[in-house]
Image 1 (tube, rainbow, N blue to C red):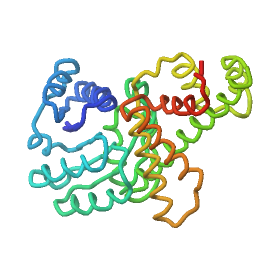
Image 2: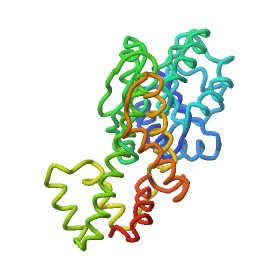
Image 3: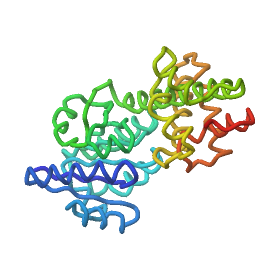
Length: 294
């Protein structure tokens, strides 16, 4: 009879919370939802059978999950919730947050007997809808094992280390997405200027050693098609790549490619717009080369 509360019903959170509601219905538990825009939570309740609540009610859940744009928004919600939280709750933060924020948030929640797990997800909106997301979790492994069954949106859950490591893996993963996306875009721009049919070139690349998730699942469907569907915002990818660059400095590492792609994503977000789909970053490559990738 577990009560879960899901805070943040954006493009990812809305379908993720729907899986929790279906599990609650099947198991006899409760699935509470909250969103800054209350109408969004009411819509979720109407569609999926969850319960739209205020933050005070959400604080009483056994498992509290957040999926917000950045760690700054998590800090705001944490400050509002902290007086109402009860000992024994496990807070699972699915935000693509900052590793340094995890330590601060974990310590604040420990003061009221709440365990914090940084647990960002990968798989995009399609994975959220299908319930096949990969969850990378930092923090107490025993706490994760207690609540893992409640993560009904997950296809794979991996404990990656101590507090903050989930956020670290997510940032580097998304920086690698940016690297692959940008590199493939540059390569196709060169081929386009050389007069090569880009659809045919992409077909070859995807059957050869230059392929990546970006070339196989993003560029043909979103860039060459000129559709650029709004799924994962370019501004959020720029944020994550920036976190990876900051992490490099924190650990005194050397990752010049990650640093460069963070700057490129930041520049692309400034030129194309942070709300555009992340694949629209290649519009900056198009401008640099005087051609469209189509």
